Image 1 (tube, rainbow, N blue to C red):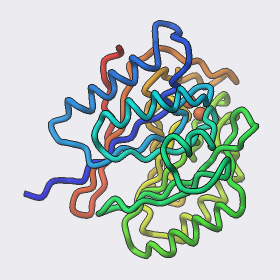
Image 2: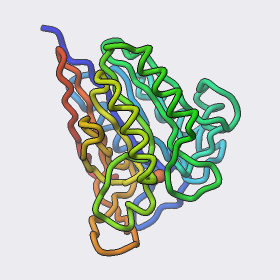
Image 3: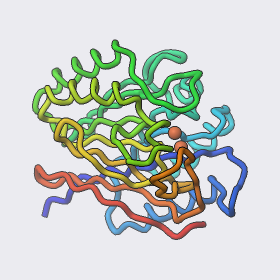
Image 4: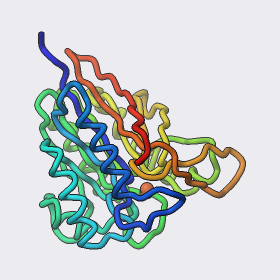
Length: 257
Ligand SMILES: [Fe+2]
Ligand SMILES: [Fe+2]
């Protein structure tokens, strides 16, 4: 029996942040990786949707690399707003140079993974794309033809109805610009992101969008405040299973460390 292709998704590791509210990013990530190791079926690859580190320091990237390499499966990473593009690039041997946007694509076998960097260096929170990045994305998706594709970025391109998060997420005009590109490419089956520290879904250009859980702190659902409140909830990961033309995205919560 052919088995599904399994892509694990980790997000918002924030390695280097001092333990807070009973949560330590390193032990929390280790608990999530132990959860991955307990899966009855081996993963084929892991994608990390940004904020690998909290301060973007070299030693934080070294720790990220060490813990992720120990999973024994290929790992594909991208920057979040807490990351340093150049240091992330150096630690994970990513294509491109220096602090240019980290945009690249990977052939996963049955699927293509296309990474588009939604961070804006020097800015605290909101996500955005340079026009050249969206043109590149359009070109890459054109070249992929009908190959089933997952597009990944740090800022999840979805509205949350929470003023705190909507103000600190992808700028709405960028959501629309991204939607225009995605609309031209029917082989895009899923868009994944993080940043929200919360599992959330919506659609963009008719395609599902999933924001994966953080391996560290989770965000409380508060719909009437500009503040985002984090708490030490159980961390988790998402699992994307490609099975004979169907893509199923699921979330696994693991006991907090
Ligand atoms: Fe984060
Ligand atoms: Fe973030």
